[in-house]
Image (cartoon, rainbow, N blue to C red; front, side, top):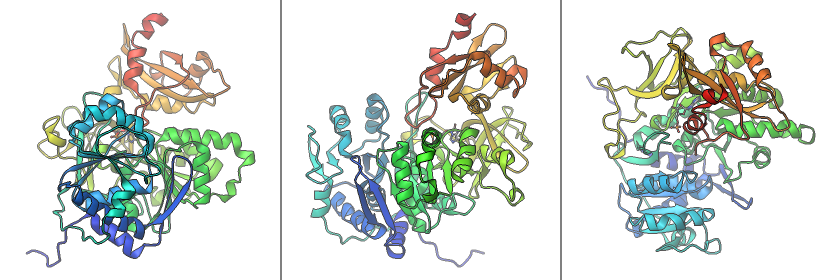
Length: 546
Ligand code: AMP
């Protein structure tokens, strides 16, 4: 017997309408590249998203067509998030930090018909335009006065498009399975692949994000959106923010610690989210300027962190310097991205210090709505004992079912599981601990060594700013870990002191074979350590080191 409840399509437009009607005055604050602050709210953003939809109609952009953005976090980008998707087009948020070759590949593959860009990206746009003949128009996210000097065909001005369009628009009744946004994976190996989200997956994911033991978002929160809008749907914040009427603070390109601190204070931010490298710089700056900062004015309570593993030092400093709880989460572009979140359990009440950091350093527990398992190479499941390692596999309503245009072929096994390529343990409480990417695992004498564990330990050394561990070839052990260290400014740690520090904390066979020092470590366009480059650069290191 079937239930007798209504079935309405799960559409992004319902989130936009809800925010406009029930949280219309809740603010959206943006900082432009010059540093000026712009204030608007959900009602205005939603109204302008409707004007945008009319403008897209006038441009002849059909349902399902891809509309690309090359933009930082700002109110116009948010309007595109709402207007493009709710009107039935697909928003392709492109990461402008990628190399021009990658950008040309991605935007060609996506068949982006129109590109909306921040004026600061004018040189990039000019370089890309000759390589993207399918682009029918380039829209500067500005008014006429802010239009950059850029030589491309059919250059349009966003504010003029909106001014010429009517505000009268009804969102179309789309199929909830229609595509809504498109993001390409970072593609550290092979070409980037497109992940095509649907309205249904986006709305379900937003419910999980809002849930108290998810990201715990609320209409009373003010959220500094450090994670770029072009990275994995900004972890759902544009959608879950609308779902709960949360104030959004969009920092534009200025992610330096001083600018972030000013926004956090001035906008009363209670929550924020970003990758560990941003917070590493932020906390170093706070520590150095502590005496001159009025830390008492901060209302910040929780910082969401993921994308790569935050070192313990970040978790500790957030707590000690600012009284902030680091909420650790794990996921990937293919998973919308939220899969696990490190909300504490009732049994952790009253826990503090190192014991609580132990819990926070893990990647968190699976949220309801997706399924997670730890697969052994033989196909069986590894036990949740916190020791046995396996590959994480996921399935659920906001997990990819295949890449755009069938790239990469079949990506699910016969039971619908997606292989993440991440190696982990799961403890008896369900907390996942990532030990490596499958391709980064160090296979030493038949044993697996976790590069992430050594990196985390190395970064708790007081003179280490950032650390990376890669496998290097070894005549006896097949592979051995090499530790590559970027010292903190003003410090010159020695190989011996770092190895002594690690020897006290690691089993002997896991202690790196050598330590190399660098001025800075390479990162991908999404802030992850670029291990492919390090592996190439240090390939023969042990042979050279003798
Ligand atoms: P992306 O699709 O660019 O977001 O990258 C996803 C990958 O980033 C995952 O498969 C992990 O390898 C890594 N990652 C994401 N979150 C974390 C985390 N909290 N700790 C460690 N690695 C992470």
